[in-house]
Each structure stands twice: as C-alpha cells, then as structure tokens.
Image (cartoon, rainbow, N blue to C red):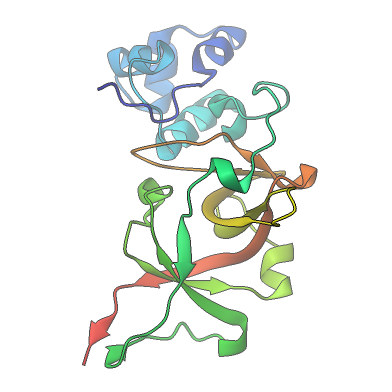
Length: 207
C-alpha cells in the first residue's frame, strides 16, 4: 500500500516559483534528486523533518511546503465524531515509578498516548507524556511544540475528543505520522483548543 504520509505538498510549485531545477533544489536541501522527484510527484511521503529541510533550502515557511497555509486546503470543520481519541488521562498503577520533570505538579498532567498521530515526532503508542497545562505554556506555545488539544462537537451531547498534534504558526495543529495525517486544525477558527504542551515522555517502571 502506498505511504499516505503528507502527500499533499507544494514542493514542485514552490521550486518552480523560485526558478530552480529538481537537481538544484535537491543539492540545496542535501538530498538526492530522484528522492525529491518522488516527493514532488507524491510517490513518496513527506515527513516534517524533510519538509523543514526543503523549506530552509527554498527560504519558505514549512507550512507553505506542506501546503497547509492560506486556502491551500479547503475549509473543513472537524468534529469529535470524525476523529479518533489520541490520548487518555494516565492513572498510575500500584508500584509504578513515575519520574518528574522539575515542574510543579499542579501544572503538569500525565496522559497515555493511544495513537501514532505524532510517532514521527517521537511520541508513540503507549508512551506516557508530561503535559504542562499552565496558562503560560498554552499562551506561549512554540513552533513545532507537541501539544494535547481538544475538539468539541456542536451537538446536544457536547462530545469532545482529545488529540495530540504539532503546532505550526500562526495557528495550525498538524499530525506527524507514519500511518495517517488528518486535515490540520485551525485554533484561530475554534476548530480545536490547546490544553497543554508536551514537555517529555516516559515508560512506567514497576517496583
């Protein structure tokens, strides 16, 4: 089955707008031109680290390379019913040893990751993550920070889904996955709300 990872990119369009050949851009990005050609023709997935290399070579923002800025993706209002739950609150089991990250406990929550929505960003199924839920963290989220966010339905049941995403300025939340890449969520449009910033992860050790 073809890799579906970040296929909807604008690499070819941007390369041509900069007057570069495939060979020239490949050299600037430090990759082979056949590899770049496969990315441009969407025969090979484009993960975030590679998108950043190409963006740097072009002098463009990574969101432009990924095709997730402006109107490059048709508006689509996501709902909790349309997305799977990526994380759940972590409840320590008797004997679990839980490390600390040097932050006040009342500003840190722990979540168990249930999907590979950010596996290419180092967050895999089964990991326990520390999430900084302080107002300072949420208000000052940094480019490419990994975050916990929630999406709410508009129905009478008031459903919500917890997702893990990566922040791309100025307002997008994206997946970075080897398995699936959902449509970006726009926090300025109220499509999702950042609940906290992931500061680290661990695997529980049993005493």
